Image (tube, rainbow over all chains, first blue to last red; front, side, top):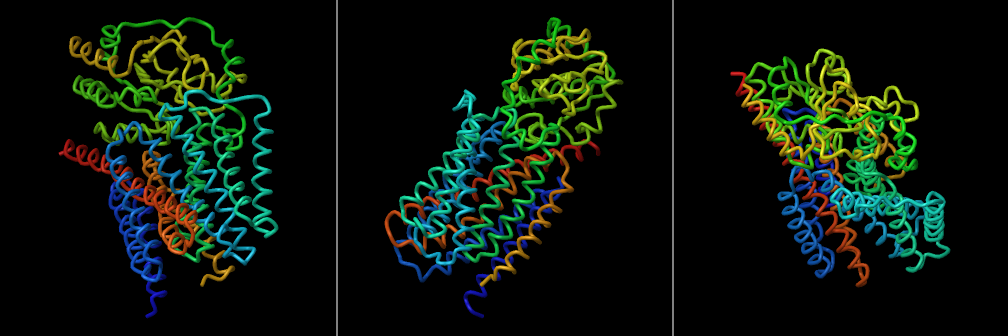
Length: 461
Length: 101
């Protein structure tokens, strides 16, 4: 068996393990084994590739090993240390790194001039373009979620500027691929413009849309990897990259659909600064409640539905929330958790946090399962959620979120909202739920407010 | 060597596979799954290794080095965070089964 066949077979095995792994990750019971299967595939592919690098110059081999060691150790340590609540930005960061790697491969292919084949050069360039956009865009998404960039940069004619950058990137790309200007300068400009486009595209997107954006960049990185796989004749990269590209696209669509918005809308509508029109439609005042009264209300309910949101994640309140719910369950109160598909910063973000706190799955319901049950609930307890319970999405056509499916918390007999202050939520839209007659506001950080509720329920029980 | 049309076949079949594998996933696993698929495209590491292996000038070695470094971060970081998240689901499931006894 030739060494090339052995390499090809190990890549085949890796591709098989990736697909089996992803398949197993799609059920909670087999999920951990799934990521381990995929991990074995990755180790196998990397080890065999390294073993067959005997023919390359020693200095290059040394650089490969050093780069792997540094990258692995940094990622290992940061991945182990990051808090569960910060997961979305870490995924964005690691994803961006993958895109950057694909771009680097493309840069080497184009700069070396080794691609005499125009088709190959074009595929390398497209992959490099996508990878670069995914790299810089993911870094911006990371910086935004991490709080390093607080402002959302918007200005008139922004779309024209982005279009201009896109055209510049494409023309540089065409010049390089066609061989008219295949010099280092043009290649450098091509990547510089592509990176700039990723930054310019992501800066104006509001934080509420970040889940969709991260998911999109994840799919894009997959595609970029697949394209570079074509160029390098690497079937494992083609298969793994394409599978991720398709899966990521589907996931992105699911998320955009949950917000009742098209992908184009997320990327180009500058969502989240349009509070002006909607603000006027919400009239009435928010009515505050003391934790002690809210606790009594909860303790003497028959059925409570908890709606967690990003506020719970920020305050790391998931353990306290579960403590409160266990207390209520012991008192004979029926407790359910209602999860909106886009609550938090990523789909399933809330589920991860609740799982961390030890909440059993059967108490957790998604939008379709739970919405009819709000009418029978005595209390809907909103913890740091906002847009996903805004009834304006159902009734107010002028609201920017009109048409988005929401949790019908306004149908509950009583609504208690835990919120840091009176201001607007992440998307900057006023919430009609907060001024309803049956709604009471419990102001404070989710962690301390739930702590007070626990004391109040204990006192009442 | 992968011939152009064969490559298109691989591309098409892999795209359907990705679509099918994900389409039956419960919402609670969306974040871990996004993270898991993020880990899977860390396979770009093998490409980056090969690319750096063929680099012959200093600027190219720098770019190649960056590529391998970034790809290793993608693969290892993606694995670590995915496993951490999924382990929580196991823990929560076991607690539930324990409580049911």
